[in-house]
Length: 410
Picture (cartoon, helix red, strand yellow):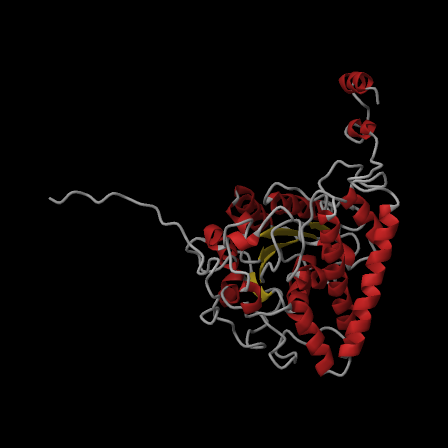
């Protein structure tokens, strides 16, 4: 009898590392307009194919085609393009501010702007987002004050969170933006719980939760799926698959599973994959899923196939783990350019209008920054009083905190 061979673990590896030439020609990308659109009351087992394909609307000629097209007017699409340009201008200026020492930390949404900006248009006042840290488009597409966002990033005296959160971890109940948590996947279980509470109260508000591909490996992801499917919670569960977690590629979390969306099928949850760089497709899928939730038909899981063009954060150097040319080779392109080309094809936009819109939005962001800097920066201050660390925790402050505040002299 032969000696047993020693066991070994399989560790997934990305196809490309620094120095390699990225080639995505083997990535299956279905033709725009080729994926069917079911009724919102469809059962999960009847749309297995949608968890493995990719819903796309805009083709390579800049045209909107197929059953998911035709939901937005040209004016609505132009507003969407401006929303994405605003996010990109905001990110660029805040990234520079971090390099200048005005804030300690920043995270861009570069290459992913279409996801949050388009999804925001499918929501109603009172709905609640449980976001992760690349959904600034949800706020910048609404009427949330940009100056308040910058005050929070700068941790200055006008910071609405009084310096008690990391920069970019915004919070606004009024604007349906639950406090961002740095703990991974908590957004899913919190969003499901909020949605269940809304249903128990007989309310008409829905929840949406957001995580990245890496966070699907966390236990909260699976717990949320159990509760969402069992109680048919009115929630949309969003997975932004931007190919990379902090420095590990999406295959580490996905393992041998075909797609992240396919994980929803085991829980009986209708699950879709969508081209995350196609604004029109994202909106169509978001509208389909939110309509399902509002109709009492339960949860939907959506996987957005996109690419994180920038670093994970300002404390990350992506050149250490992926080729610099990888985003340029990404087959789904740049969401801003694609929507611009679509509008130009329709005669509703032009290169000159695009330049003008960029200039206006960059001036808007610059003016907001000037106003925020007047309230201080991380480097120069002023900052919120240390006294605030004792506030807004208890309705009536307990004696031990009163003593601590007195000992601290604040």
